[in-house]
Length: 204
Image 1 (cartoon, rainbow, N blue to C red):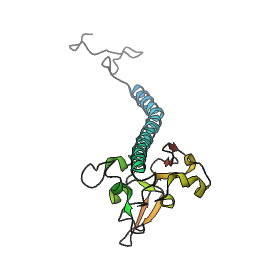
Image 2: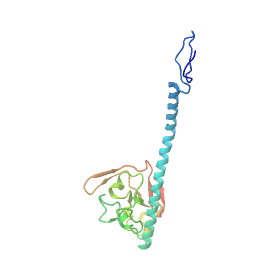
Image 3: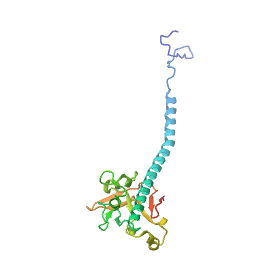
Image 4: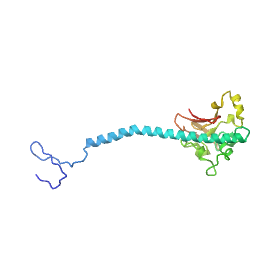
């Protein structure tokens, strides 16, 4: 039997009757399902790994930001008789602060503002709420605000490497100056970055 299209393959039944023809190279339904299943399996394996890598990268950028702030604090200490900035824990409109200036304003000489309002150094890449509201993702430890660093070990009964200076301002419900509430979710899941009084940054 002749065919005008050379790409067709003819299949014959047991009695010699012609069956449905199939074009070589075309996928059957079973083959297509196998390919889709394989792709889905590979995506299921790789996507969690990629998500974990992105989280680690955000934590690393956050830690680098805190180190830069720590260096700025060290420069401030050398110019102010080893006394820590007397700053509020977060800028307005976060409520509280005892009329103190925010840390990013006090350190402006050492960490210039990018756009006239604040600096990206104070922005954690995992923060989707706090920085947009007040210009800082990191809370300043007000209990050591204005203290002389050399006195901290006696005041706190701990080494400088154990005393928090700044930390991720996440997982908290903040009061705003207008009476509203700001709920800030965690930046890094169960992890949190913290800058200590000796200048090192730790993830805990």
